[in-house]
Length: 310
Picture 1 (tube, rainbow, N blue to C red):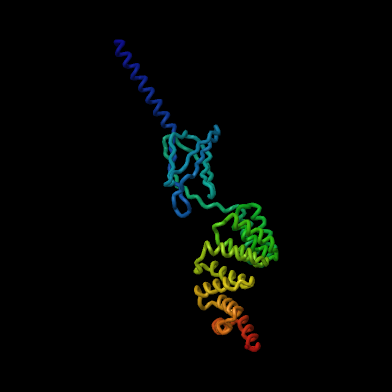
Picture 2 (picture 1 turned 90 degrees about the horizontal axis):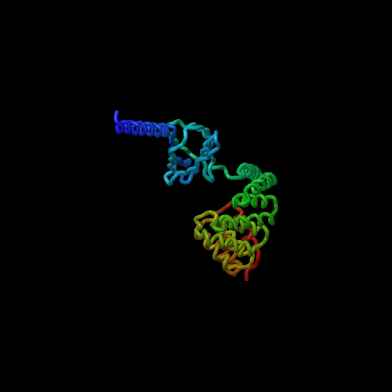
């Protein structure tokens, strides 16, 4: 055999050996692919996948794309500890065995994680609803220690404090909650109510006005109730004109409601419009029998009728 032919055989043999080695190497590798979604089936972007080599301790990390899809090739056929995680969701942890030359396909569904302090929060709600004021305070305080940055927990703790007669503590918690969630009018409404309970009328007015500036639509029940309360606070502070403005707005939203009608009647009586005030009070008695407003209006009417009119 000539040398050129021999060289050709050697080169061919080397190429054959090289291709066999590459093929063998490829056969030792595996692929993992799939999609990850939330509970509603929406794709989750940025989910982290961690594969921990149980033998060598090496960690491989990759993430899902905007469509919730993930793909990783070139993985050694080994045993791995497998973790799927994203902030705000319960992680998935499992054992994974990859086989050479095989694609592993997964469809993962991540469930929202229970917020920190949720167990104590649930206990607090149960105690509050059962009328166990101290139990509610204790549970909500425990929840607040675990989740100090949660405005929702602070609001509920404040409500428990109010039930327990701890007005100053309630105000403190609600002020913190309002600072944490400045865009939430409902927190400002709760703060306004706590200020009323603490007889801090000027601060109550400011809190209610701030909340109504963010949520002025009186179709919202919280805004509606806040408007009536604000009118009452204005009246108590001797500021009759803004009280009339608030009661009139509430009455326009619900023309048959007794509370704004009675509030407006008191304001008109205070300004000397006795006839209109009496008319409104009589409407409250006639249209809302059995309500606290009707009882108050009836007492007011009785007192007025006993007083000689000039």
